[in-house]
Amino acid sequence: MVRFQSSSVVFTVLVALLLAGLAASPALSQAPFYQGKTITLIVGAGPGGMGDLRAKALASVLAKNIPGNPSITFQYMPGAGGRRAANHLYNTARPDGLTLYRISSSIVSYAVLGETGVQYDVDKLIYLGTTEHQLYYVFMTRAALGHDSLTKLRPAAGLRIGSAPVGHTGYLHSRMIAYFLDLGNSRIIPGYENEDLDVAFARSEVDAQVASMGTISQHDFLKNKAVHFHAGIEYPRGWKDPRFSHLNLPDLESFAKTESEKKLLAMMRNLRSVGTALLFPPGVPKDRVDILKEAVRKTHTDPAFIAEYRRLTSGDIPTPLMPDEQAKVVRDIPRDAETIELFKKFAGTSALPPRQ
Image (cartoon, rainbow, N blue to C red; front, side, top):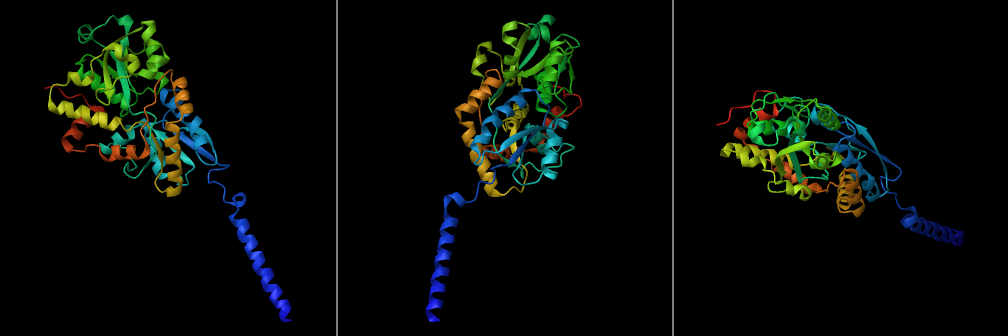
């Protein structure tokens, strides 16, 4: 009887040790969270524009840098200059790490300026970086108009400037251009989404627009001589896309007359330098946030991403901002009341203020 009990104890110990060894075996270790899963990437704009192409370049390489190599599917949620998607992110999205958002920096502007329709807190969103924060925009008119200089353009009556929806960065650019270039006879026509504006411009439904250098490259505006360029908007100040520095266009700030106007432009640059943000909703577990942050860092320096980005954007060059740096940019945005009040006049629909 004693001998049997002793053998039983030895057998139990051996089984326990065997099971412990198997549990520690790499073959039986827990699979990565994202293995076999699908991430939904919600783009806060319609399909087909430069933002969509940048998102596709990012997604094409991001998946391979996430442990478990999940698939990534796209969903488009245009509306209210990104507010619709941002509200969905903040109030509806499950914080499980399986839904990503890529939304224009306009949503930060809306929140900082206290605009209507904001149902989210930008200081509580989880920032995962952007593919671009050095940007260059150009104000151009159709060459058929014959306005090849500001001297000719300023007195022209009825100039139609096509623009993104009210509150969007593109709308703000259009209002700033009209103000600082003294285009008092112009009329801004808002409401265009992405490539719709390019179509309207090509069909002569609008006379002018503020375009990214990616858009200019995509439509070959430099070679076909179909446009006249008048001024640039640099992000950050002093940075020009090297492919187009030969245009020697004056930056918008060179038209500023007062300190308050310079502060206004400084706020615009700071808000825009957030870039089109890749975001998680609040509450996503820290380990999954850390996984995505590291995957984004790897993707932004991955030669495959850079090549795909340039291919899809007709040679545009990615200028990434990493996750933690992007979050800091948001925290550091100036929020003094005087500049905010002036800025709001440009972001809204009221008449532009008179210049001093």
